[in-house]
Amino acid sequence: MSPSEPIEAVQGQFADAVRSSHAWRGDATVVLHKESLVEVARYLKEDPALRMNFLMDLTAVDYSTYGKKPALGFFSSSGVGVRSPAQIPDPDPWPGPPGPERFAVVYHFYSTAHKHRLRLVVPVEESDASVDSLAGLWPGANWLEREAWDMFGIEFRGHPDLERILMYEGFEGHPLRKDYPVNKRQPLIGPVN
Amino acid sequence: MEVNVGASDMQRQPSFLTSRLNEAIGWARKFSIFQYPFVTACCGMEYMATACSHYDVDRFGAGFPRFSPRQADVLFVVGTISHKMAPVLKRIHDQMAEPKWVVAFGVCTCTGGFYDNYATVMGIDTIMPVDVYIPGCPPRPEMVLDGLIKLQQKIQDQHASGVRPAPEARPAILEG
Image (cartoon, rainbow over the protein chains, first blue to last red):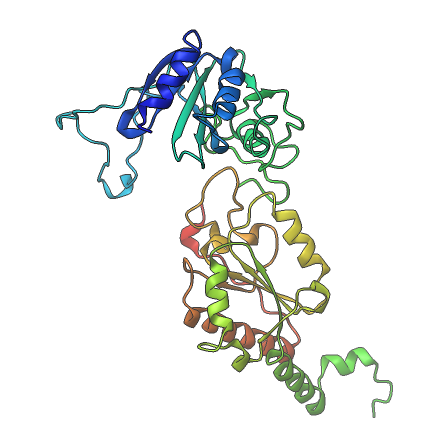
């Protein structure tokens, strides 16, 4: 199955749910309205032609500083930036953030039967940072959603036990949000350093 | 003639015999280190390389890891310590019986290493005294053995003098 076929299947079945789609560099991606996430996910899992039985990854992205603040090059301490200069033509540019919303929740699905993949992206507003949980469909989503809650503060409605998974009890804030102060420290014991 | 010599006076003026005995205890202790390896990260591979036959810490009498803090003399903290882990490490240290020593194995335990973020303890000396720092990412087994020999010297000196040597100062470049 080519990368575009799962996209077409989802578009054919849920025309209203799909906001946009692309297959940039071979990675099939569908951007969804968050209300229709669960029904699309159930279709991906249960449709015999798709059978996405493996939720490979579930994470989130905070786009609040995207394009506003220049990122440091990976080797910035050596003075060598790794960002490509604007002069180099890119025949296949990145499509950009999925929408104007601050967050996006990203799901990577794989079918071990048909050996194809699909990525779902669900943009999420900052004022209502919540999506429906997929833990009922893929049990592996349980811990991945807890991690996304821990790091980004995205609430997963219907999750059986939405507790922090990496950070400790009493930790305040969500450290991978771009507005979490980079120097903020919350040690359990010992000095703040 | 002074007859009323208290025990405290005798301790202040150690006789030939007691000082030699302390040295003998120190010598025995430094070659029978029971270590507690608190291994959390990639430094553990280098710890294993040091422990195995090519480098063989047993040549220095430290070949017997004990996984109970009650039975250990030296706490080897091997690998990055997160803020979530810090109370556990402190409790392990508190559970060890005196005399006890702590070795910071790898640069993450010395200073935090290249981590400077919300999750990592910036050096275990912020939560417990450290006797020997072994920097490196990870340190070569030769460096570990060098640190071990340094620790043995401290154990020997401690028993000879009766005074525990002050913990190593953190390198000045890391302050502030």
